[in-house]
Length: 202
Image (tube, rainbow, N blue to C red):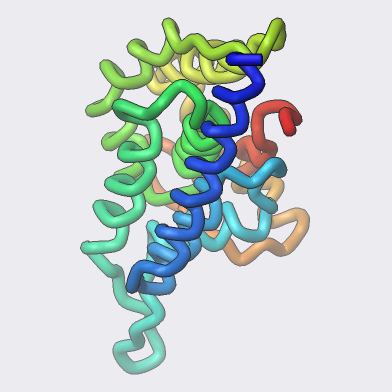
């Protein structure tokens, strides 16, 4: 009975956090990130993740016929993303998992600054190797633990990052997705990231 009561309180708190984030004033970029990191029981769409990856590359501003780089967008995206993963309540496991999925997508598809940012936060990813939360007998933390380990392995391997970004770039070109992250030296342009939310859980 106490367990059911605890689960219900967590659900109410999660819903309240979503409502608060939805109501607060924010930019279009922030709105997309909050949507990707909600407590809702489904994963973020590839379209939404691609939009955020593109946000990490370009703003909507124009100089003549050229889109110019928005140097403030990456910190905005990554600040909200890491807030979702750091010091999070275990019951908010779904938000943590979605944060990891967003990070994976940005490393593969977004600005190369996202790769640097991920490496600068490798300590946070390692802390998530110990993430633990159960709903009854269901281990909700396993997805977080596994995804964080995969990301630490990827960002520690320049060749693997280059390979993943090139594969992802090819996928975007194949399907005509207008996503940023193309580019240049060191790490080619990215693609597939992980969209789904970790598990069901009602």
